[in-house]
Amino acid sequence: MADPIFIAVAALTVGTAIIALEARELIYGAVALAISLLGIAGFFLLLDAPFVAMFQIAVYVGAVAVLIIFTVMLVRTQALFTTKEDKKRKGAGIALMLIIMASLGALMLSSGLNGQFGNFGGSQTVNFTQIGQLMVTYYAPALIIMGLTLAGAVIAALALARREDVEQQHERAD
Amino acid sequence: MATYPQNFRFGEFVGSLIWLILWILIIVTLVGLPLIFIVLFYIPLPPIGNQVLTPYLFLTMMVDPSRTIPIIHQLMTTDLFRVAMFPGFTYAALIAAVTIFVERKFLAKMQLRIGPLYAGKIEGIFQLIADGLKLIAKEIIVPSGADKPMFWAAPIMFVSTAAAVVALIPAAPGYVVADTDVGLLAVFAILGFFPLIALLFAWASNSKYPFIGGLRALHQMIAFEIPFILSALSVVILSGTLNLTGIVDSQIQSYWFIFFLPISAFVFYISSLAELERIPFDLPEAESEIVAGWLTETSGMIYGLLQLGSYVKTYALAALFVVLFLGGWAGPMVFPPQIQTPIINIAPLYDQQAANATLWFTLKTFGVIMLMLLPRGISPRIRIDILLHTGWYKLIVLAFINIFVALALIYGGILGPGGLLVR
Image 1 (cartoon, one colour):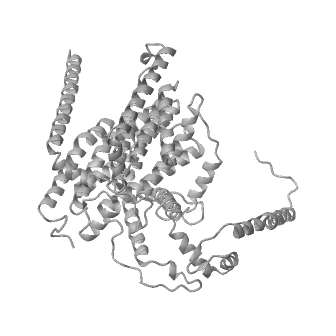
Image 2 (cartoon, each protein chain N blue to C red; image 1 turned 90 degrees about the vertical axis):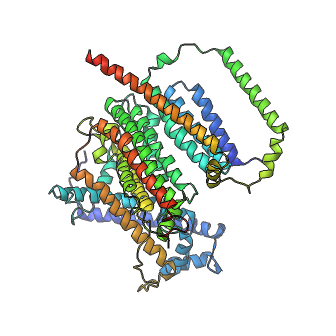
Image 3 (tube, rainbow over the protein chains, first blue to last red; image 1 turned 120 degrees about the horizontal axis):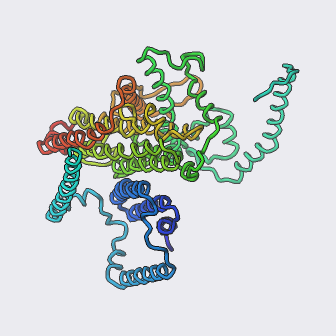
């Protein structure tokens, strides 16, 4: 019934995600998180979306996971833990997560989306050429707004970094 | 300490050899041959040509070399051959091995030295084998306090990641392990693993110099990743596809992209030098500053694996340069349409197109590899602030120049579908 590859990827993703939360060594947690993100890329590959999968790997494993590991290595671990682990809170968190996931799944299954996805079959896979064409035609305003937002964020980040730099030079001159 | 027996006699030595051969013969007859027959009789074999491969036919094929040709022909069409032999790991590792030897002799000639000389009589051609044996024989020392699982896993991850890049590169028409629609993106996604592995290995070594080297590797690779991708982007704009085979085909239909995108090729070359940690950018392994950088605590075969991985990566990036800018396997036909060999007729295995493509691809790749080795003989190491400045400010701007050139070529109707220069 279920695809064995799907089950293997799901087990890998969920298992490494649990390790990422529970690992005593922070660095193992970060590595497990990277593997979990790789598993998500595997889901995209299974869904016939290699373009998204490659970007998932390039951005999340190549950049985000590296940044997290970098931070974990450079920051003292004592500084990160201020609250003690609590059994009750942990149980409540797991219960809350299970309720949310179950209700989301129930919603998905009861809504019309279920049948709609079923009708797609394997024939209507969207490739990146179509995505690109839609990006510059129908979704052009959204693309422009996203580009402006990102440009604004980059300029703001540059401005923030710049000010700090100037202040440091000023201090050194004193 | 090996001690030699005092009463050494040549006759006893020959006797022990004969004894050994006798034992091998006994084992082959009692275990090997029955095993072969069990495999032959109980495992269904595929049809070769128009007859089913029976055990008797298989045995005659083993005796008569010319009859094994169909089996080899069958094997050459399998995925296993692609992965393990030709465009895959063996080919890449052979080129890597040749690169290591050629690099040593080449640098020696540039610096008026001799280089490897003694191993293998002629110009030291067996130096690599000697080095390999030495590395295998050496003890692997894991530093105390090192993170053992990561310390052992990182070199294997390094080699397998380099091999994964090789798997995406087409070496001849049809000869590619993974021919995906998003090949170029996949190459860059896989290249993104290298800083992670270097950093983890550096951290796992539990030593100061590797950690400094790992941080440098991370800075350097992330700084040069963006110009790297941008320089390849202009090729994608010109060819209109991310598939590496498609990129080569579009160059065969027009001209090599290096003529239209010289700046991109330059940026790609510099970025790949930085990605490979080769000499002007070898700060992560700067031997005069931080011992050996992130490789400081490596010994024995762990060092050997990391070296193999880095040279396989060199081949992969040189091959990628050839695929993106130098027209891949395009070149004038030099092979005859049919060949005659004296004893064994290997004509069924011969494919004129594939042989020619392989020849030109290998020649071009080796040329690019030589170009990547060249700075090691002539250039000093650059400072880290200059390195980061080059990566973030200069190369990104240069890459954008050629993206605009590529766009102008497409919109001016010179290249692209129905362009002036498209044959």
